Length: 230
Image (tube, rainbow, N blue to C red; front, side, top):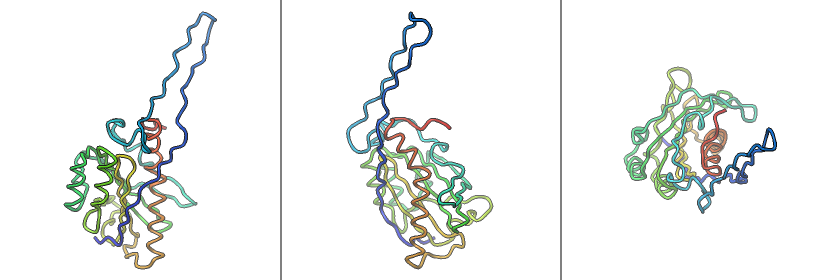
């Protein structure tokens, strides 16, 4: 398994607007006492709001909020072929430097999923690691490299059964106290030798991050809680 390129990327937070307090309307007779207004918690200072540290974002991640079974982007179907979660973060990492950095960062969860985009001939494993702080996640991302990356998650059958057998590209990203590691390669397992091929995999990874983990982590960042099931 060879990494063709490693690029450190910091996910730009999609702040949006903070939710306003909800004021329930009184119902029934005039004697009915209205419920008190729901107070919106005040986010911590800093660009990452609630997800700057795990202390202000204590609810564990779930597979459901991070990884949809499938999605379509620009007419291309992306399907999740396998997923896994664990509290043993170092077992989901290859490379002693990254393993040590993740352990030092107090990792409590690692959730991985593998996606297939057959139409464009690409597949990827994406992992999210729950670390103690933005500073710790940033330091851990710096340990990713040619010998330090996420363990690819193969499916039992189909093209993604062979993920990790070819030459791929890994990108480490940081969003608040979360470290996101993405490994992508072509279904045919050939190396991305040209600039165009490398860009194809890079674009594939960008779409995958935006359509999966970025939205749910942005909700935690702004609302201070996970996305509601839906």
